[in-house]
Length: 120
Image (cartoon, rainbow, N blue to C red; front, side, top):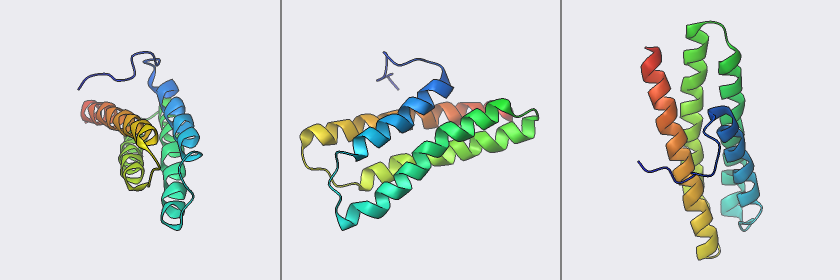
């Protein structure tokens, strides 16, 4: 898969923080319809947890703890991508921003998959 975020740092911890920040920025632009409210809450939770869990995984001493936390990161990157897909958007510009976030979540998911495979 091509890297769509060439200007972002390649440090995974920083990228997960930036992803969570970008999600928050994006959801401030989407319409606050009844259909979106619960999706937005879930998206905030899952995207914010990706960074928090990766940082905690980095600080873990045991391989088992690290593996568990990375698996949680992987699950939450997948959830973030899912909830982004459910949000309603007003126009093409917002849809483009959402697609970029979904691609970033997909890329993070692939990285986490790779780390999980290496810890087995």
